[in-house]
Structures are given as structure tokens and as C-alpha cells.
Image 1 (cartoon, rainbow, N blue to C red):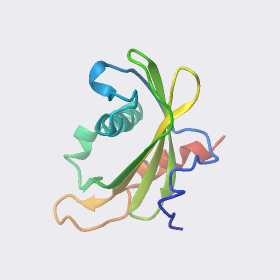
Image 2 (cartoon, rainbow, N blue to C red; image 1 turned 180 degrees about the vertical axis):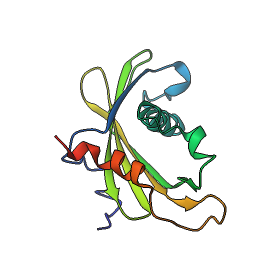
Image 3 (tube, rainbow, N blue to C red; image 1 turned 90 degrees about the vertical axis):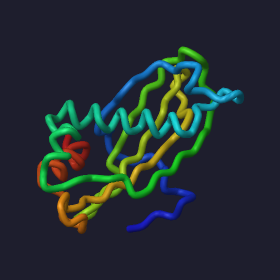
Image 4 (cartoon, rainbow, N blue to C red; image 1 turned 135 degrees about the vertical axis):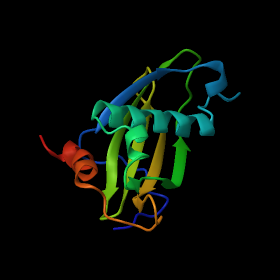
Length: 150
């Protein structure tokens, strides 16, 4: 089921796939104390890569396989300020899972335990040689649904 942009970053009801932390640096924050938009996507992708590596599914290995998972869409919303040298925790969830694509939603939680920003990335599965859509490999699909297993 497709989500409208206004509610596409709503928090999923399942537990996070992964948690990732980082400390903000001067190049992460704009003059208003908001995580700079490009850096939010940078850290979201760092969290995604760390999740894959943690589960023995590195992007380096994928690039030499018969499939690739490029990002086809991103979005972000900013909700609360962050401070320099603040520890931010990213929790991310499988937002949507289809045969040949998936979306991940990210929550950036500041040191006051408030959501400072959210992001979403949509990934599509392509055959690495033809660049045509193909079904997600079972190991990837299993990782993405693991947050629904208690």
C-alpha cells in the first residue's frame, strides 16, 4: 500500500531492525541547530551499511553479486534541534517490503530522547548486468522482516 508523502515517515509499529549511534560534528549541523539534510542521509546510509555488515551482507559483496540495491527515493523531516557533540541514535525499520523493492524509515533520536529528524530511503532490486528489476534475494528479504519476529 502506497503512503502519501505527509504520513510516509510515521513510526512503524514493529521493533527496529538496527540501532546506530554517532556524535554530531560541526559539519553536521546548520546555523539553526538542525542536522544538515545531506548529512542526515549520509548517516542514514551509514546505519544501513552497518546493519548489512552486522548481518554478513556487505555492500562490497553485493556489488560483486547478481543484484544491486540502489536508492530510488529519499526524504527527510526535521523536528527538533541537535547540539554540537551530541550523541544521536538512529533506529531504523522496514517501512515497506515488496517483491523487488523496500523502504527503510529512520528515526534520529537526540540525547533528550526526542526524535530530532526522520528519513526514508526506498531501495529497488536490480539485476546487476541487465539493470532490470528482479525479486529481492531471500537473505535480504529475511533480514528486512526480522524485526517482526519476537
